[in-house]
Image (cartoon, rainbow, N blue to C red; front, top):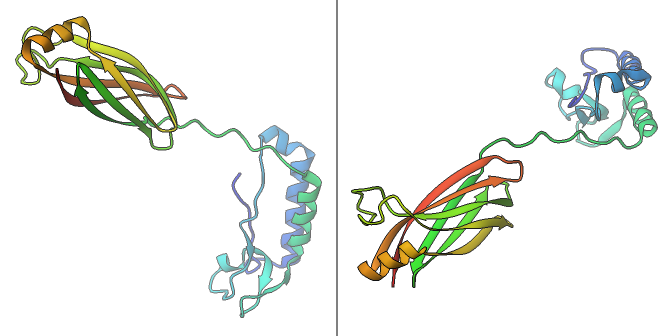
Length: 210
């Protein structure tokens, strides 16, 4: 339940108070437990100063034309008494966020290594997975024919605080190709999962020089 409310422009304030009392008594009598009702909120604390429509009269307290509080409605005492009886109520568990995390990757190669920066978001401060260095597909300009489609290095990555930087060393195959050609263009692939297990991938390109 999100909120309840009853405008005094629709019914007599005493009628609203009596109906509110009966509704809250029903919750206390077992409806809350059976229907798994959590906290009950009244739509708004005070009326608006100008009562242009029924929604302007949904408050638990009146409001003068000057904007000042003009005192409680009968339902105010009913709702306040019920809140004091109930004390604190535990909030229900939040539903898991099943959206895919947005992963961004930046990579820079130097001295036979690739430095990879991984950012995980939005709202995700932690994710983990693997970083792989691959040569381009056969015939693709980013690869070398002898290493086309091969994995040239990998390591695990753990993002904490939304961002992490790791260094990936070239494999023996990658180091041989680098010594032979002087430079190696690689595809950096990052595959991670957030704390709830939702996966995401991202890629970047880097050139490694001796």
